[in-house]
Length: 296
Image (tube, rainbow, N blue to C red):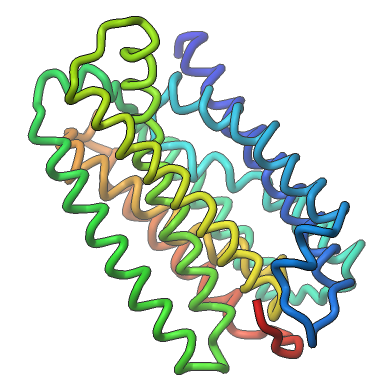
């Protein structure tokens, strides 16, 4: 295993820790909001929430980008789940959330899913793949369209099913963040071409499209996460968020990016990892303490 690959792995793990600490800080800020007033204006004026936001974007995002460059998008979401250990401890310690044995098993299964998908050895040289097979870009657009359609369904579903609103919103946030992660690699490639003076008109167009996807996916995903955290428990919801965040990159690896398994054991390991993350999410969804509703 070369040094570049190890740097990517550690960057993804540290990004996960930083992102989850930022989420914990944001949840603490959310507990101090006025539930009868609109949420977003309160968050923008809340220094504690802004601190968590800055931690995610100005520390977590550069680490995430470094991981994208070193190992590609397939492994990153799984490796970032290691930050759940910090999140779980902090949620129990600082926000008073309960944590049952089934919740513990759920988090462990989500983290184990990381290990299995990591052992699969999925790795992607995105730039070379796009150069060798341009049809990948069209597949990526189709997959993105499907993700957006699922997000729209979630948006309307959360309005209808109030008892499971936090679950639907956290799944929706996972879809939106996955969309951002899918296009981040494309953004980095075309950004490099533009700044090196090697870009064509098509490269500029793709840079604009990928920038829009990354920014919109990230911002909407963050907003939807806050909506979910306001009415649910961070220690339960964030592990559930990793179900779509972890599954979508694996699907993109095999379908959108048209990659083959690096070994004969890769696909079974990925299958076990996906099974674990789904079972873990279901266990975490069994019990949830909901808070009063608010507007956003």
